[in-house]
Length: 532
Image 1 (cartoon, rainbow, N blue to C red):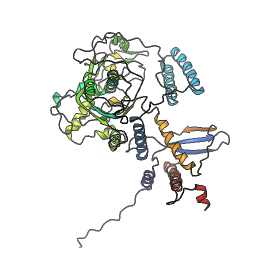
Image 2 (spheres, rainbow, N blue to C red):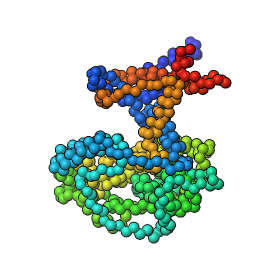
Image 3 (spheres, rainbow, N blue to C red):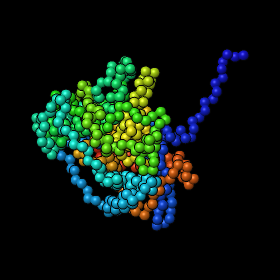
Image 4 (cartoon, rainbow, N blue to C red):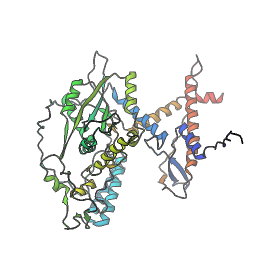
């Protein structure tokens, strides 16, 4: 018998994998949402694939790369401005007023409703609030439960263990100083959390028993608020409205740290002084020892949560805060602070923009993946502590400590909160991975995206290619639920999108070539070239 082993023929790829690879090659979303579009004038119905908009490459590579490219444009446009950005505010539209009227009616009905009806009305109010925010409305809307109880007056005197900071009146400007009549440098700053114990090169603690997991969990939960306090202190010290583009990423030890592009030049010593003097006092009820657990949980009696044995109501959040006489936690930054001056338009600025947005296409779990047993044990212990650490006044974890959180309903499960802080894949990192100040570029992401589309349209129009605009007021859009029998297969939508993208790309490249013209000659219009 021959010693040669016959090789089996290689099996070809699945058609779905081929479609996905082709879509990724042409920058087409690989998992679009199916929308049913009905023309109310003609009654015609068609199905359109809408990009999923994911920011994670493992979910949808084309959408994630587009989102990262958009963030890079946003960072670049606002970092080294030479003129103050325009901050005009638009006036309320008819749609805004109609939604506010609907919300007022829902709130009036909610205050008279009880039980399940009240829960349903509250969900409707939240959906209206989301729709208002989608239409560009900023700020918080009035609480349906009425005005919140004013918190007790706390002393604003600085802590004795924190150094004092000079305070100046903040001028209404966002640009830094100009040097030598033409240089206006900006900054790149990195802030980290405090230490909780010695760690190894892989981020796992040298001695897990002495690692302060409780403080690490609470610092992670309140990290975004601590960063907000740092910006407030920095503006008061330098005396002008400092603007920033920042990203929050996890370190190897799974603690969050901040990379930020700062417009304008600030002395490095001032950065270090502000960091050392910044702290956040969390005036929450004590949550060091749990009152409930191990199968013994508070129960809902139809109006509120009560003790399962005595039937006594749990203390409301506002009443529990009134009894607080000392902060439950004080968050500070670590001693490691990195700051660097960056000139606009330089290669170094481009590298730092890439570094700022490097991990935006990866989920938090992919960035802090555990490859060793010590790392996995470290993440498990941190997640266990985060599971019993309240993340907000509305967190259901408060019920474990005998406090009824704000907005608790019959649907609230004691000890179970859907917030990102409690997930194993995030390990306490804030929900917002990108933090951008309001006057950074004076544009939203939607406006930046519209600018890119307008640039392409102008490029095509300059050589005679004009896309006709269609009136979409008569179109009715409806998102189809997964499993809807009327929905076409997803691969059909993806293939159609690939064909459209190939056509658009060919037109755009032809426009660029026509605009450039032959070597040594003037450019001609696209219509002339096609006629020839």
